[in-house]
Length: 169
Image (cartoon, rainbow, N blue to C red; front, top):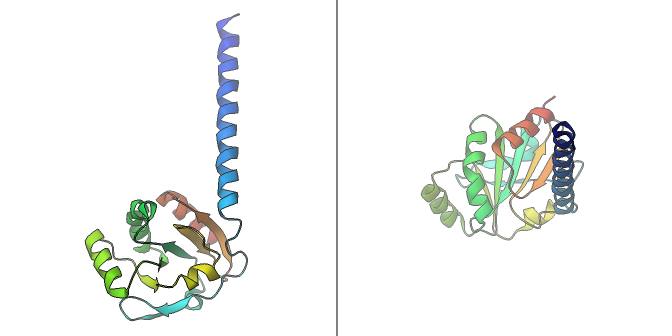
């Protein structure tokens, strides 16, 4: 068999393997997000750790990232620096679900060196309202208050930025 034919078959095998990986990743993401909120974003309101009142409705007019996380979640810890950087130039509301008292959360944020806004959800009620069954869970809400994108599990900073950009079109 000529080396040209072997090279062509090698590319076909690589293309097939890449296609299989993409299909598996998309299937897993679909499965993980099957129960999360869709359509119009559920209500999200309360007092941030610093005492300010926040409501998702106040953020209409531009996309907002709503990020559910927990202090006990290792994937959330790995992702928090990205969320902190995104919060510097985009609207971000993070919800700390089942992660302790506001004082414990403040100590955690100080220890970790992050400064994004945090809405405590000690009971997990907000998470349940949004259909969150695992963290991290991240939603991009468009300017009209509709959920444009939802992911469960780790997402790259650039992936989140791309979703925010797409929601703003």
